[in-house]
Amino acid sequence: MAGVVGAASRSLRSYGWLITALVFLALVRLNQIAFFWFQFESVTLFNWERNYILVPFTLGAWTLAWWQWLELPGGRWTTKVAYGLTILLIVASMTALYANGLRLGFIALLLITLFYGFRTKVRETWWTLPAIQSISVGLLPRKCRRWVFRASGSPSMWAYRGRNMLMKRSTW
Image (cartoon, rainbow, N blue to C red):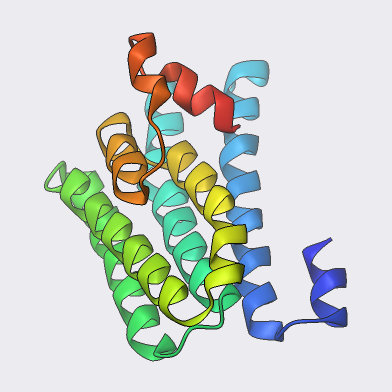
């Protein structure tokens, strides 16, 4: 769908990152289906595939997709930072070192994206803010999800429900 729409309107680069991010997100969900329905992979393999490979690549792809979607200037440094954060997150997740800190780096990059978006393209940024927030909440761990809601200024009514599972379920 994104490929067909991309051929008709915006730059090919923004739709390329959107397609990449959607494919990685589909692979995350496909991995869950394969684990729970068919039960041919172990918990260790499922955890390794999801947390060490798919989620870091998905975070990097979505970060670049939002930057390109808003057509913000300075794409080279953003691409380098997102690539670096993705590789560091893979290594940190495998060694259990500073993985949440690197995820906060992705949140910082998303906040920079929103900041530049609100400075240059206010209307488009307001329209993409719910999508950015929803995707971020679904991919980030519970500790990092609170930061996304607090930093974006959204009312965090989900905090009153006890555990944060409702916040994650409501976005998917």
